[in-house]
Image (cartoon, rainbow, N blue to C red; front, side, top):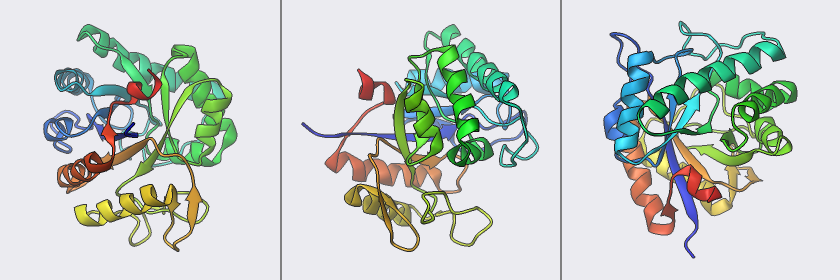
Length: 256
């Protein structure tokens, strides 16, 4: 039987008069989408429109919660208590799920954004707070977590369904962490380079770091950041490549 793989994108990141990415185009390519919930980007109208568009394309919907950092696009770390983290994650999942239910769908996964994700990859206590919030909302939700992260470990320990993700457009360090965006070469904006990067990791069955080190891990999903300048081109290239060797599927199909 052909192995499943998921292609996902982070979408719904427009806000008011500000436009980010080409969501409609990407929704015709990916199988799952993680949608901003208003804390780092997005607004109620954008959330509803993006939910509706995703459902029309048969794309599974995930909440993309972040620190409350609209000005910094959720890419700045914040010192929050465990209670605050659980509440802000619950708040954002609930907001998006409200729109999803109004349009005849449901949120099926949760994927933290930006600094909240990066911090939870290293900080076990933060990861556990996020996992508790996801489980409190719905224990059947899928936690989409970076491969080899504390967040993935916390999700498994909490009894959640966990899907492991790699990034097509970001490079990795030898400890499995993403290369900081402040460093040259951390972000890949060429579709062909992203394709080579993903192919190397799938062939190696693990993360491939900048030094060439292989960190073995299962891989369920490949992410393209929707705010990238060539996000659609990259997603299309990856879909064509992945469909030759894998069966492309939305995240819920991995747990059916």
